[in-house]
Length: 283
Image (spheres, rainbow, N blue to C red):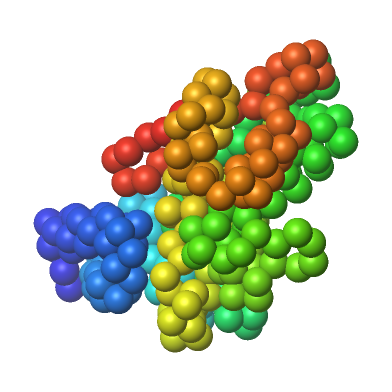
């Protein structure tokens, strides 16, 4: 039986490995990230299983089981994640941790659904926030939200096409590989102002084509936000320098105009992203 000190060391090692994996992932080194994540999962699982054997170990027991299950999910080990969550729920966790374990189980089912389609979520995400007269406590006039959600998706897809030097598409459906690597997923809205989290899906590594692996969701998100920042601040020359192709430039400005607030129903449209320790805020 492991001592509390040994369990703590295993947990700290797992958290350090997980952070290194996150950094490798956002830098595009997926292979290294997968190796580090698996090591983190094994270390955290050992710590969680050892804690589960100790008497009167709540809430540490359920917290470590939740953490190990989350890492199992990141490693696409869905059955391991289910089992760890079940062990956590079978104990006597605090009500808050209990709800988090149930929420994590829903994520396991969702990620398994994506896996069956050969997809996984990229770790990079950004938040879209809207404030105005048409925005209430966690609610918004549907047309104001739906128009902007669709525009965000089109901006991301068009940016992916441009970054791969594809000719501007006047109509029709996006390039198959680009569309597959740029599927947009939205979180549930949060209260106060209306805010959602946007994440991109990408092909699972073993199912990726060489063309697709060159598309990094993080770089697509960063490019869109940098261009929106130039548009919002009126730096037209800087924006044109980033989007030299006239057709892509005109398309971007048209989409950005649809995204922009009208000054009354929606007074502010803001974006916040985090890439490692780097934060970006655009309004």
